[in-house]
Length: 107
Length: 244
Image (cartoon, rainbow over all chains, first blue to last red; front, side, top):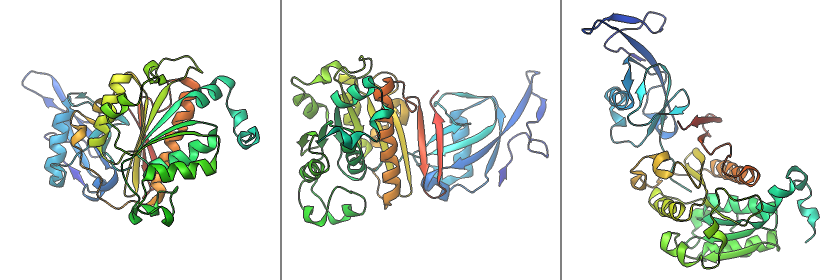
């Protein structure tokens, strides 16, 4: 399942340069392959891919993810990109594997 | 007991590591699923000093994963049943049992004369110290551990489990606390309500004890001092995610 972003990636799913924006600089899109852990893997479709314009932020990616998977709204989870936890305000400039990580509370 | 009972693993640990292992006070926060496995493993490592905290009495629902208990213990306080069982596993253990929930006030009240005042982060190898194994069953309770860790600067070996899954990380005496690892509202994370299989509990507890051994070797520079391991018993995958 692939959810197009405001600018597309090329047919092979690689980053693709988008047309220049109003500031004259080219913007890019990046492909985020979503992998949910634990019980969230039951609500996030397998092979979900988001295409987002970069640079972006953790908060924007989270919003985008929740738009695509409404069942995530209200769920507790953190995001990690390429096996690195993302801080809330962190700038995201590249694509890769986006992990959706709920905490496991029991003992 | 003789030293032979440790001879299978003692050669793997240098003298400083062994000294730290056998002089540290291990506080076990929660004597449920994780706590039982952690305790069972620690009890076999050496003549350790263990401090058990749990307010609960044993319920029949606990018997699928809480390996220190038998049906004879039903209705009895877990900490006392666990302590009795541990003494049969290794009579050389030093054990203290507190039948109550661990929080900053209760912990402080038990510290008089304890080595906890020396913390656990930067001590010399062999220096008596205190560390905590987080085997609790809710993040609300873990907020109490965060307060203890911040006040006493002790290292916390965290484990959490639910269903088929679990996570492990080590929260050092300094640096990221629970808030940094799980977010500022971590204390409000809902308690686990789903069923739990025995094997994720055993796997996560084993990894917690593995971190303890590394801590005895290296101090707060353990393999999971800046990372989290995620155990997925559905797919049999273990993933590692680093903190920035």
